[in-house]
Image 1 (spheres, helix red, strand yellow):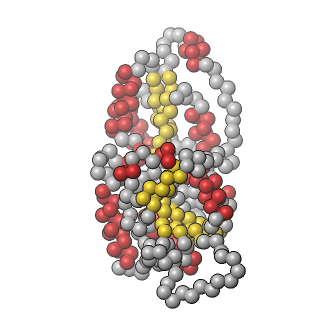
Image 2 (cartoon, helix red, strand yellow):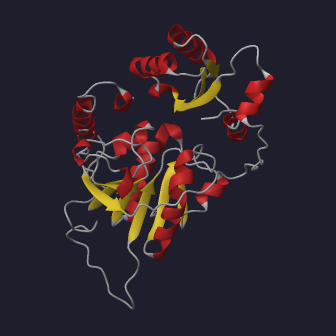
Image 3 (cartoon, helix red, strand yellow):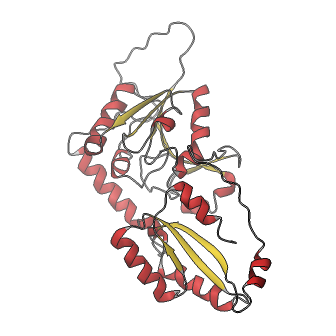
Length: 308
């Protein structure tokens, strides 16, 4: 979660962690499969050329990729389009990729949580991919470890986890040009693609319910005894909520000429975590509405209750 810290040097720890991980892997049962630009072949390989050239092999490494997850919504169409140029294999946890999202790839290889790293490593050794593309690096331990090994001559990462890896084995960060910001924030070479290169799709198996909304002014006039607050949705996973952000919302509330109520819809806000967050948020924003983690359908309906 260091990517979400409120520190200028928050990414520096990644270099040390990556170095430690790589040294521990190489001291154990792992080694680099590819080196430089040898395209995954060892010096003794003698490929036979028969007929037209085959498509190069692309191995996509997945973290969360269920058909209701944001990474599926943002990346699935672009990944499916790669099948026109590559033989696209994908590897991911069997619990994190569902039947719908598996259809994005030519071949999907499920791995178990407790053996994900050695299974994915063995798969890369078998496939000898020309390119490895990590949809994101940072949500699952096995992807952080795997990314510190050279599995292909070219290794790229996408915006599935929106922060630079600071990993020496990752060559490039594939990102739409309108989302780049400052290139100095990336340790990788920034590979800009057109702003519409990764079109979004709606989540699967979610019913789109048309919203009938009474205008805010009409509702405000009906509740004339006290001001009706403007409901502002705050959408974030729990690790993205920090003190400075809450203080900023409190300042907005203080300066606003109309009543404002911040409504928090936070991923992974469950159990004791929810209780702690509710107390922390109410200490700064006493009137805030703090909600537990919701399924996608309920989440969309809840967002429709807000003005902003």
